[in-house]
Length: 87
Image 1 (spheres, rainbow, N blue to C red):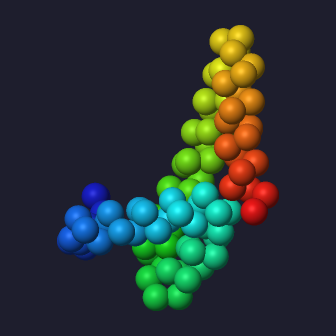
Image 2 (image 1 turned 90 degrees about the horizontal axis):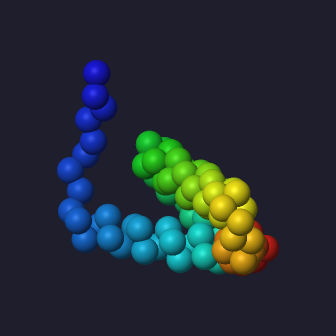
Image 3 (image 1 turned 135 degrees about the vertical axis):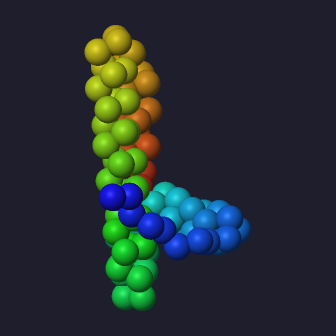
């Protein structure tokens, strides 16, 4: 059975996505998700899943570039990951 989601204004989604990506770029996404978890654990789970998906996709892209013989692109992804994981 499909899960039902709450209706949310698109402006709210836009604002949340902006806040999440800002936190992720600063390496503080886990703190951001933890604050949401205090008020809405289900919503926090959605954002935690999104965080994990972004990380997985970056690793997949890096492996793809390495296999395609494009190490300079793989290094760009390494730099991107290091930028937000080391803050």
